[in-house]
Image 1 (tube, rainbow, N blue to C red):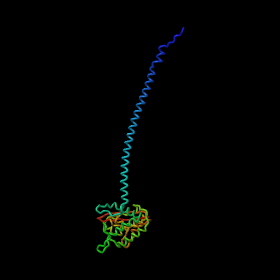
Image 2: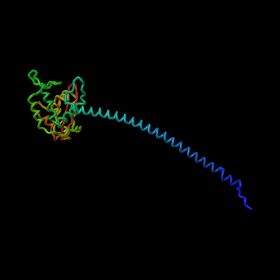
Image 3: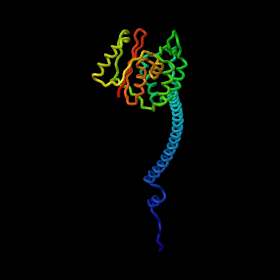
Image 4: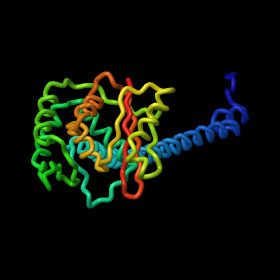
Length: 267
């Protein structure tokens, strides 16, 4: 007898029809595939957005850099122009602020100290403004200032500047500063200034000192360098162009339209 080979219903079901667990696993796989597709899609979108943002950021950064570069260029150009400006007298049509005088005068002095020869053309130009009025020598630039020797001392100063080597800038030091008096009469009294110097020297070493009455910082420094001031001629120039001096203080005051500046220097 041949044996009958058959399968029971359960075995058939197990072989040909996915059971519930298989359906769940298959669904999980499909969901995972869908999730992966969705994630890839999101990644593509994010990458696109990122690239767009990067491009926008690069454009913005480029604009900012250009603006910054332009501003920097303008600042540098402004600084360059300031550094390259010739030492000229202030335009008297513009009201000058005397609080700017100490810094302006010191800048001119330091420019001369750094390169004395560079100031020679300014003195040569100034010679053209020397005139005689009522039998008196006058420097008649923007301001009229009485002179003692005139062209002679101007030319002598040119020869001196040719021989002076460049030196370091003076540094402003408020410790050696002396405040000008508050009344016009004290401006004129030389004893007031001398007494202030004596009092200051009790505490601080002062190597040189003088006062000036010219409001325009360029004209003031020009005539300090030329120093055509009679019996003390040359002492102001010797002070501001002394390589051993390291510190300076310049204080100013204006009373009743009268200007006064006190210069003090120290090693």
